[in-house]
Length: 396
Image 1 (cartoon, rainbow, N blue to C red):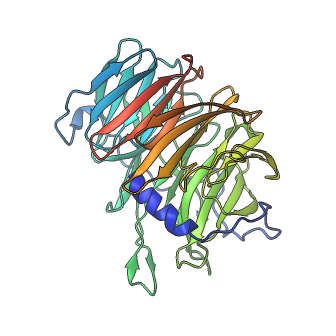
Image 2 (image 1 turned 90 degrees about the horizontal axis):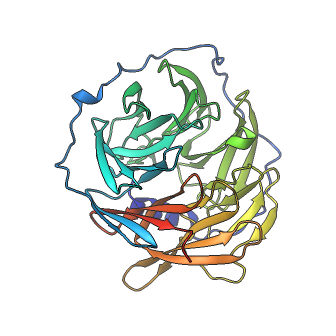
Image 3 (image 1 turned 45 degrees about the vertical axis):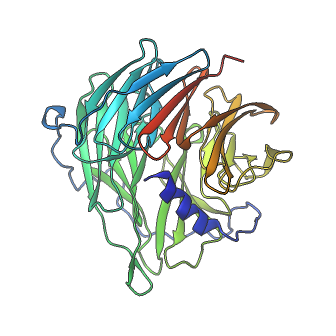
């Protein structure tokens, strides 16, 4: 989904929000009985080999420009929506809403194209062992969400799963609510957590079989649409936020929380924020909202505020990331102007909140630190084509 759609949805949901105490509710949500983790059913589609897939558009040569401070890649057909680094930090993997991945070698400045899907890629995510890449294909007009698991060592698709979408209506069935599936690997890397519409399901990465339905927002008297998945791998915790799709809970999001070892629900969390970014050690978390705080990940008490002395824009925090060491924290700030928003990336010391540097940017959809923390990759675009910038943080 493009950033403009994300911002529109976020702006609608958070308009008129008031700050609330970030404490878990005392009464957890009730869950319907679900199969045990040993039960498997709903086999996936047959594995699709890369040889049967060709790019959906003519691939233009991506122009690469470098200087001492940054490297820029331009020429993507669409906005860049996802980035991830290889385990050794030598390759940046890029998706841009087309049906192919772009591999960028930061040492040679060369790009390689890998057609991987039969439809546009909406996001990519990497397993904790950095060996398997999940490629999610979906858009607001698609009838299903598909996930292809790619072996990064060979570039081959090792498994494919597909989930049909169920139409979601509001206001008595008059308006269709568009949604895009999203997914993330469980900490053990063997289970994939997939959110499509009102449901969250667990899938076996190797067999492609569904393991368990974790949540169903249409069950009973509930009427909830899942909005996003957020993982604290160091603490084996999964968070999923949802809102009432009839529009009754737009001021605050409710987060469900599960233990990913037992997959038992723990409790719920309510707050005027829509996303979470966890530190590598799992001890702290930063929620997505205008006021950027570092919170204790156990009780969500405030530990540090980055914006006490700095006024950020309305959509600050739409993208954020800790570096792998946990020392630094990057956040996107969008300053509104008469004609358009101006995007900046702020870098802070995550322990003291001290401002380190600011970089200007294009429309930002995603940002990722390299494994050694010396580089920050930013993806997005301004209109078309998409753009990637890799900042060398070792430079002053």
